[in-house]
Length: 374
Image 1 (spheres, rainbow, N blue to C red):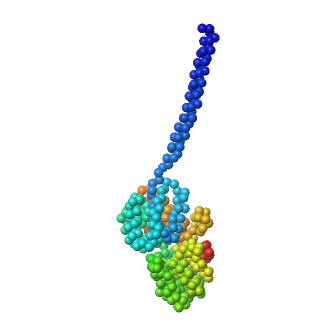
Image 2: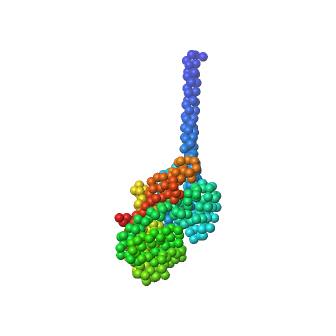
Image 3: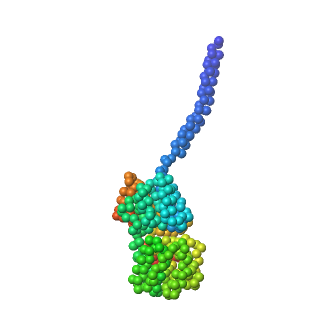
C-alpha cells in the first residue's frame, strides 16, 4: 500500500477518535455541572432544623393580642427559634379551671420547656401548673404577690404596681377641680391594686372618694353605678375596666367628666376606632416611656402605630427568654441571673421573679395618639 494512503488512514483514525472524545466531553460536562448544581442545591435547602423552644399562650383579649405583636417584632430577626402559637381564642369566658386543664393538655402535647404566656388573667392557679410540668414560663400578666422566689419556673415582665404612683399623683395635681372622685374597678388583683393607689393619691390631695365599685367585667353595664355617682356630684372617675361602656353610658346621661384609666384601659380606648368620644377631652392613663429604638421599629412594622404597654411586654418577654437561652444550661438559673435595660424600663430577675422596674408617666388620649403630660 502506498505510503501516502497509510499516513492518510492514520490521520483519519486520529481525527475520528478526537471527534468521539469531544462528543463524549460535550455530553459529560453538563452532566457534571448539573450534578454539582444539584449537590449545591441539596446542601443549601437543608437548613438546620430549629428546636421548637417557644410556645405562646394567648386569649382573645386585646392585651393578649397586643403582646403577641410585640413578641413577633422581636422574633422577626431571630434565627434558629421556632415558635408555636397556642391559640386559646374565645376562652376569656371560660372558668380558670377549664383554662388550666386546656393549657395543661396542650403543653403536654407540645413537649415544650419554655412558654411565653400572653394571658392577662393568669392567677394563683397557674404557679402550681408550672411547677408540675417543670417548664419555664415568662408571663406578661400582673403576678406581683402571686409568685415568689419559691415559684421556680414562673417569671413576669409586668411592671411592679408601685411604678404607677407618680403618674397617678400627677393626674390629681393637674385636675384641681376634682373634689369628689369615683372608682370603677375590676375585681381582679390588678384592679384592686389600682383602686387602692387611686384612692390613696386622691385622699392625699383632699379629694373625697366613695367606696370603690368593683364588679364583674363581663356583665357590668354601669347604669346603676353612674346614676349613683351623679347623685354624689362626682367630678372625675378612675376606670379600671369597661371604659368603652362607661363612656357610652355617660354620653347617654349627657354627663362628661375627666377619666383616669389604668394602662390596659388606656390602650383599649386607643385601639377602638369606633368609639364616639364626643365631649371627652380629658381622658388620661399611665404608661412607661418606651425606648426610641423600640418605638420606631414598632411604628415601622405596624403602620405607624405607637406601641402600648402590652406591646412592650410581649417584646420584653421574648427578649428575656432569648437572653437566658444564650447562657446555656438550666433556663431557670439563667433567668435568675438576668439584669438589663428593657424597652419599658429596667428588667432585673436577680432578686424577684417579677422583674420589671418600669416607672409610668401620665398620658392623655388624643385621638389614636397618647400625649405625655409633664
